[in-house]
Image (cartoon, rainbow, N blue to C red):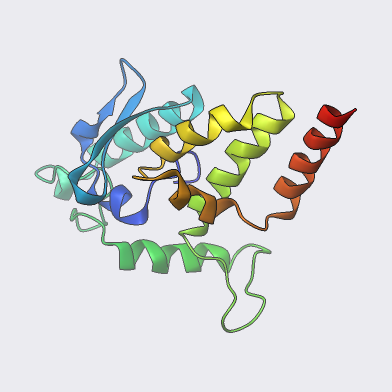
Length: 169
């Protein structure tokens, strides 16, 4: 999710058949049944390949088409993923700031969007050309849906300001 920006529900809905190792792509069925193909970085493909090898070793998962399976061999539900994410957080320094402000699995999607735009600024790409691609990648019907993921991010605002200063010089 951190490397692709896919939704939790999209991750849970993935089947083994959604991965194409030959082309290095992931087929996502998003909201309203929209299908998109995401190219994967070689490191992501390698991690998925390793996971699939481990998953294949679970005899109880042999008849389940799902990519992400529980130890019982069933398709993972988003509630289980959320609970697992919270358990992982307990072993990191990413604790909650308050009862109402804690890292969530869906924050990985936000991080993906922000990092994609930061990379565009840092590598000199035109953000106005990267944003529509990011919006499509994330499965948004309108680019305005993508802005919500990017607003008020200090690092992104700083990168945009620096770019504007360079253009004005």
